[in-house]
Image (tube, rainbow, N blue to C red):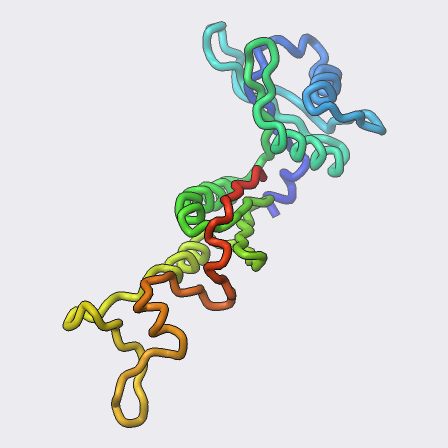
Length: 220
């Protein structure tokens, strides 16, 4: 609910103090159109817009962020999509960023998802982080969505090699047993263990035929 109440908010970071003059909304309407190269019809309208925090007397300090609540949700989405595609906007030697407004809990989940990016790259998976905190993962055309960073971590753990039997380093560890008490590996796993390949995670039929595919770190 908290994220829904914030969904029409955007933050603008890096805009020098006093650039807005006396009319913040008129300044933002003009600035956002120029930065995103979008022609808004109808024109942008705001429920409110202002700087955060007390005014700073030190001109060398970082400018205060601007928070704006737009009147139309579809225009909020257009602005955020343009910001993600473009990255920081460079204006008069200043890097200006536009970001969404998330709750503290959502921000923590997003950070936890982003911390797993090195492992996703290592496993040669494509991925993307979507609003508010959903990680999309795909490999060889098979996709899966995750809403909990811990579930994604466990999913990635399932791709690790099964441990070897400590009594015989050349023999894969026994996993199951038959009625005679003879322990056997599930079908197809024995060859994978001998070849020392990653065991596919449950629910996804990943193969090695596209291991050479290049990662794509989607900007989301």
